[in-house]
Image (cartoon, rainbow, N blue to C red; front, side, top):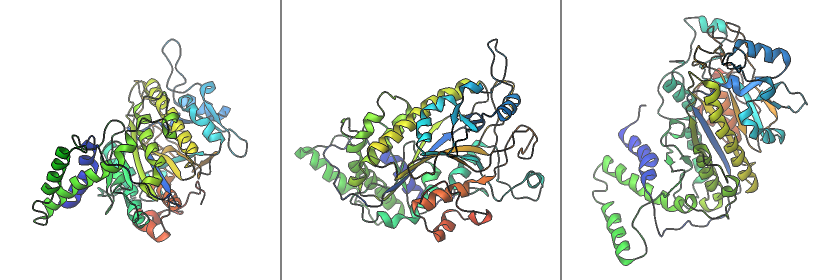
Length: 466
């Protein structure tokens, strides 16, 4: 990423130094007036490339048979077969019109009640694009295509930045935060508007806004400080050290800003993140879930529950989970991961509902890419392109599918190769623009957040209520 030294240090500090602090003893969270217009975006990135072909599956007789044949059929008791999920195991997703054309992976069954309540939707065949593409376009040497297709690192970066021409110094979550920074100007605390639970990620790097990386458990702050005279003297000494050579160079100022920011952020957030009280509704919703993804979403839930104390009107969160890079034994490996993801998302939904924030928070999935429809000889799948994603929240026009489901045919009209690698029919730019519009980004601001958006026929996919 192209970034000057000061920006690098600021991003590194917000995303690293703050996260390595442990306990700050005597600094309490300041109460504030409840914001009247709060919204949050929660990005759940499935690293490694989740297999959308087994996440959402046709369940009508013809559609399922086609899917099953091309995936080698379900596994047999004798060890044969392919990686198709048994038809009877799929969780039917009944749409608003009463039809049930598709089923959900059985290990995501915890999400079915959310679908039935109209708070969950799916977006078909979305991916990185520079312009709309047909198969003939893809085959053309002169047609613009995203660089480094099927590469994990490149496609992760393009999904997070919505820029497919090369490296980017910012992500679309960060650029959204840039656009709406004025809404948080009256926050009474130092807590940032963007937070990652898994370290530094491009998605939450803005051109001006920075994110804070937090631990999903444990202490978050300075150690060794309390209300004793000796402790307070040490704290005054630290404060004085942070003023040494201030103004002498950009590098010194940036380093001191990093530490100041880390201390202030931990003072605000540590009491929230480390609470074990049963009073916060977010804790009880996650009872019995001891997975990494559940811990991350619990940390996010705690912060959202205390949104009135933090006095922020807009927040962007990044959580991640994986790896979904299953080149062998995919059925078993994906099942293990989705069995953790489904209950964690359900717990997050329930906690938001109980605290009265379900209409104000939209959770959505991203991933590197999909997996090829045709399995390899090791019971796994290879890297693909267009994928299916889930959007959850009270503002979602749920119980519905958006986008266009691909034709499941090897070397068919949607296959970029001959393995079932779907050419996306919806761009990540459009996905992002729909979420950004709900979040409050103006039409003119969308051009800054998503500079390639004008290349596509629509900027709003209509899966969000106003």
